[in-house]
Amino acid sequence: MHTQFSTYPPVGVVLPAGGIGSRFGQGQPKQFCALAGVPILARTCQAFLELPEVSSLALALPRDHYQAGIDLLQEYLSPPAFVRLLCVVGGATRQESVQAGVTVLPPEVEIVLVHDAARPLVDRQTILRCVQGAFAHGAVIAAVPVKDTLKEVDHSAEITRTIDRSRLWQAQTPQAARRALLQQAFDQAAEQGFVGTDEASLLEAARIPVHVVEGSERNLKVTRPEDLQVAEALIRDREEMKIGHGYDAHRLVSGRQLILGGVDIPHELGLDGHSDADVVAHALTDAILGALGLGDIGRHFPDSDPQFKGADSLVLLAHVQQLAQEKGYQLGNGDITIVCQRPKLAPYLAAMQENLARVCKVQPEAINIKATTTEKMGYTGRGEGIATYAVVLMRSEHGRQ
Image (cartoon, rainbow, N blue to C red; front, side, top):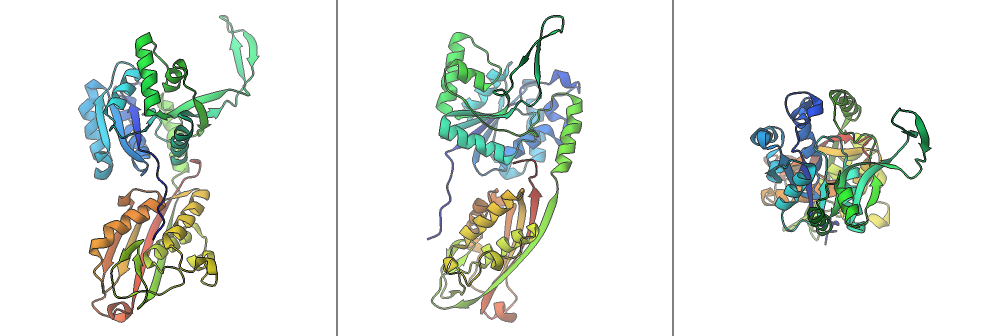
């Protein structure tokens, strides 16, 4: 029995993008403007839709630019990502746009994250801290401590006092809450005619406790044209990529299960090895280690160590995924080729893809798996063993922790 990995309660995201960004001065909504060649809105949507934890994203678009927004995202988002996108016409205020977005989220969504459409550099770790925080506390916001000295001035710009900043935090988004609490806050605001500046202010007005989780200094909001230059510099700074190649082969023997990509495949022979001998998971693990300059799978999980005897190779892959995350890297995509004469693997490739994507915390389309034969040549062609090759691209997550 292979390990089942923990999951979050159903998570939905609302992006209020109903404004036109008049301060931006570009003649179109600022979220449609290009940032390093990709529209801001597409970057923001992709930041959430690339996470398996996000089940759906509700986007509130300006009425006059509704179809233009949909057309733009169809061009820049992958089809699997676009399927999870729900579009709705935004309101005159942020509050109305968020409410419209919450309304169209599927009923099974338990946790709602609200995020500024013009914050395209939000990172995975900030998003997950908000999800975990809302699950634990009910409502949280991403924020960073205020670092600059704050001065209060009078009408003539004379300083009247210096404000103690030790307990001050600068609010960002995402702002996350259990759906029932967020709806309670919206209902009370509607009854009282209260308009908040953000979701936290609505929750606070309803006397619902809101906690703070760590945001990121790079999670900036694009408000003015000069902010684009800063955002582009930050994108360049984190775009370092590393390539890794992995290879593994094991002998087919009787009396063993055939485990490939975490899938138990019916066959009269299985792969021989100290662990479960999953050559697919091993090759991918080796490729990730290679990209990061961390040696090979034998260095981390030696066959001389009894604790790895019969080990689930998906658990070993999860450990290496954690090492990559600690070093500031995330799997961009992987391409895997399995060399196997028998059995036929086509019926099992999708399940392998799902397993590996879940462990690597990416969408399934980020991992491509192919199976081929050698036309009965060599040890794989004679059915003596199975080999796997893997190539990965690891994306730098520096500054996104």
